[in-house]
Amino acid sequence: MKNYRSLLILSAFFISETTFGQFTLTGKVVDSASREPLYGASVFCQNTTSGTITNKEGGFSLQLKAGGYELIISFTGYQTREIRISNNDNSPLQIELVKEEKTMGEVVIRSSNEVTDGWNKYGKFFLENFIGSTPNSVLCTLQNPEVLHFYYYKKSDKLKVLATEPVLISNKALGYTLRYQLDSFMYYYKTQISSYRGYCFFTQMEGSFQDQKAWSENRKKVYYGSKLQFMRSYYDSTLREDGYEIGLLDENNKTKFNVVQNPYDSAYYTIYDSTYESEVYYPRKISVSYKKKPEPEYIQRFKLPKNVGAEISYIDLIDAIVIKENGYFYDQKDWINQGYWSWKNLADLLPYDYIP
Image 1 (tube, rainbow, N blue to C red):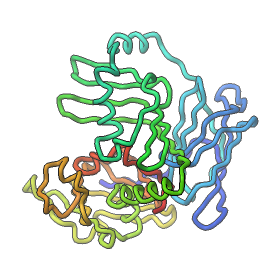
Image 2: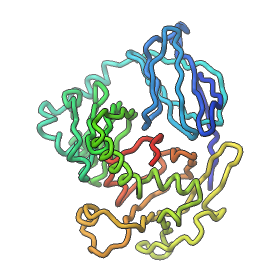
Image 3: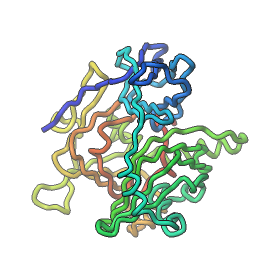
Image 4: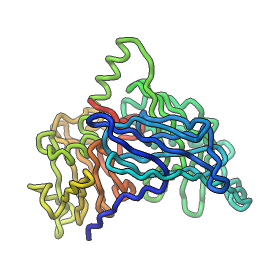
């Protein structure tokens, strides 16, 4: 059954349209108990280049392109808040942060499983599954590996990685510095499945004219065929024109995907004009084929025939997702990648405010 999730904004901000395609986001961050303003709190939209810190009154202001975002608010000693926002919301409420409390039990459990030489033992493996193994990953550098702590759980045969501070990654292929607040990274050896959760903020690098030109070209190469472009194409009703084809797993043959002739059929797709959203739902696993020229490295990585005509991703949709015009979608935990898109990690990640 398709479920429409209405946006719930639990924190303070005021939104007003400024120019076409943009909106201004303002708000105030305070201590939940004393209601005192928090000066210097970090406020940014996840996977974007838009961020700031609060002033002495706890206030902030952000200029954003139209669409949806996850607003991340953090302050030392407080629990991080995550709020879904968009340009059609207008709820002037206060953002209240709760002080963080750590129990001794949590500390003991973590330390008892920590690997003392974790970086030497698991560092390379972690980078391949977190930053990636694509050509762009070669030009990525983890600047502060000392903030990482590695934990191995023998009984469940899994690796967990935590960070005491945001992870800093220099991506010289795309011209970004990534500041990633890593909540946790998990790798399950039995299933060979990895997952990670956190909050990423992009800063554009400064460089020469030639650097900027190269970064611009590399970003375009990454964008076309990406999940970001796919979401925007679905929202804009341009899937076919942009080279995408969706297949739906056959009910009787679990190795066959039947081409979905009309991905905008009401069985799969619903438009909500009042909130500028589109909802997508498929009852079974789908394949997404990008039918323009595949990357040679992708063909080599997955040992595919040289004449393969598409980059193919396989998606398990746990529930319906809602897409905003900038390519942001929720809930992202309901979208599980395999294939081409699972090969693309932080080394090939573009911010939601990127425009080719």
